[in-house]
Amino acid sequence: MRGLLFLGMASAVGALSMDAYLPAVPALAPSLPAAPSAVGATLTSCVLGLSIGQLVLGPVSDALGRRRPLLAGLAVYTAASVACALAPTIWLLILFRLVQGLAGAAGIVIARAIARDRYSGVALARFIGLMLAVTGAAPILAPVLGAALLHVTSWRGIFIGLAAIIAALFGAAALWLEESLPEELRHPPGLGSTFRAFAHLLGDRSFVGYALSGALPFGALFAYVSASPYVLEDIHGVSAQLFSVIFSVNALGIVAAARASAMLVHRFGARRLLAAGLLLCAAGGLELLGDVLVGGGLAGLLPGFFLVISSFGLLGPNAVALALAEHPRTAGSASALLGATQFVVGAAVAPLVGVAGSRSAVPMAVVIAVCSCFALLPFTLLTRKEAPQPDTIAA
Image 1 (spheres, rainbow, N blue to C red):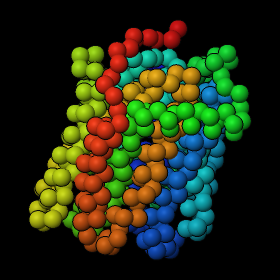
Image 2 (cartoon, one colour):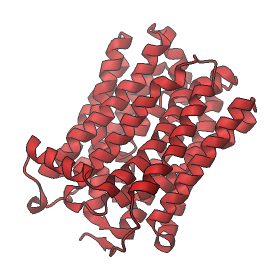
Image 3 (spheres, helix red, strand yellow):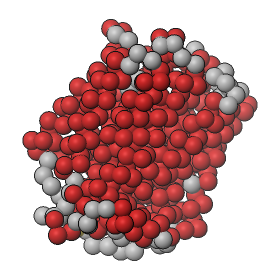
């Protein structure tokens, strides 16, 4: 249980990095001051760091083991968060957010690799589902924490809070985290070894299919994260506090769906649950687009948000488990490609949601609908029927 909680919290670093200061995003521009596009770049730079960091730290963990890279990442993240709090200009904040993302990638990519070191088969899908249920608490608590801190401090205090949380996580890892990758299973360090591992993974049609099936819905998720403060607060007049409540309810859907996935995977298998999650995401995206186009208002908007976001509890853990299933010796590199693909898609859609300004929800709705529906294509065309695998738990 202690290991599950720690890995869930470590993999939540990315969500904490983006969600905690979302309630303060509308107030950030006049504070520094900065243009809305520059404020948006603070999100994009963090996502870029999370993507690049996974590509670097995943293979590093295959070569050096999981514990040391994870500790280093948590330590640098803590320092970068303090630097963000002290940033005097928007451009330095963008830079420090990039460093924060690079370091925070350690928690995301290495947590999945540790899970693959310890589990396989349905047991892996179940554990990742439980881990996501823990991770899902971050989007619930982070906006609430951010909104609460805004009552007593500015956006700078939010970054101090992030530094304190990750410093505590570093202490827990230093005391309790054991190495999960034996030395005899490690790969030689170096770019050659890394490129060979990546080439092997990208040559696996099924791996690519599961990676894209998980990455395209992440584009929908990032469109929601990027645009929802403006859509809900500026267009529909929602307060920062009510926004945090709405955001938390949607994240609670992830937790509930992830918990259900962990309970049902033994009965239905990871592939069927992934298919169900993809269909749920597509249905939510289409409902959301229809509501925005006909001007249905907030009452029609919220169910679409909930369907799209909660679907990640089903599709997320099962896409990861199926992608990692056949690559136990390159779990760090495989986890890196999975995560990097997600964040690259997220960074690519970020500029699109604001093309019509902060007073239109149409671009956001179009991006969410396209990403959620197109995710069905790689699943259908590239992946193969799930092969039975024994459930194993590492000693």
